[in-house]
Image 1 (cartoon, rainbow, N blue to C red):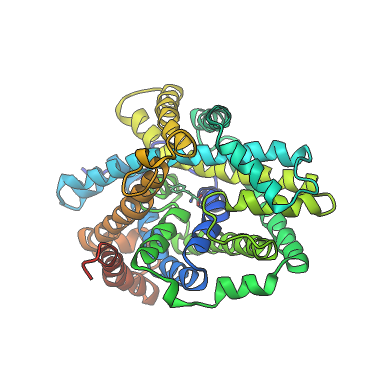
Image 2: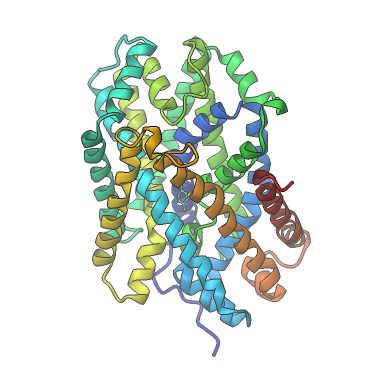
Length: 455
Ligand code: PFF
């Protein structure tokens, strides 16, 4: 029997609702916290160039494939994959793709929430004027005293997890659509204000050279893997988050247009964050490779000096928290959707259970910055947090994305993808199919092999 194509969890109210929610998922800590610090660690321009190439050649085609599978399957990722594999006469093992995504989302959220907790702590600190007139050293001290204190980190992590699970328990759509519509553009405006400030007071020229003039000698095989992993992370790809959102997408909406809008907005936010932060880094003699604390050690310097810095600082962290919130929700939605569909749990029950386990796992990340930061607790020189980040972002997401691409263009019949993408069988479709069939899988595989030293 032909399965019905009705969404079992309801649909987005319009194309915009989907684009906003997916942009809300894509734009988050990845753009503002992570992109600048990994760019700093991997030497700037060449890394940025590889990252942009990965967005275009790998991210965009896979996003189209992932949304397409979601809309065709109309279920949580595991059931979508099971269903589509059956429909296309393929092996049932494809459903494990859904499982891997659920696991990746849960692991990522466990540390994502801890970092979002830092932003919560900084909302209070900037708003109360703690940074006013401080030197770079003073700002540094505040950061280190925060991360050295597991109890404080735990309190903020707990608050963020509760915020996330409350929204998930109520259903992703209620309230969120409207909030994203206003707050996302506001975040963009505020980033522009910060870029303007950095342009006037920081080492703007030096920052532009750092970000946009590639020096390939600074790039290691591992840097290329990290740039690719980040392309998946920042676009929320490879773990079923965008697939779940796609499963609520009405039929008439153009997947291609939505994809370009989401990827464009996401990339813009990341580049603006880089342009706001690096001038401050260079003007204050800080090191670009300072690591995960980078934005927390740079932006407060600017907020401490600019007129109205308390207000702008608090607003910035508020918007960052909001951006992280809309991403966090999508990280756990595949698991919650599965629990509701297959375990017959209520949404509230599913969200509570998923939230508690994620919260507990977050303790590992909290301790990575203090009681487990010593060498005794490291594996290959990496802390628990580093390992979790590496495993999920650089291995699980690209692997998930690769399998999504392979399924969409090798396992699925051509007619199925033509009919679902809805762009006809013309040049655009053929370009997508060619890139997704050959370029994307080959690029992802080569980068993997290169990173493990086989190539
Ligand atoms: N894209 C989010 C960010 O850049 O912060 C993180 C993320 C959300 C990754 C959802 C993966 C995901 F499924």
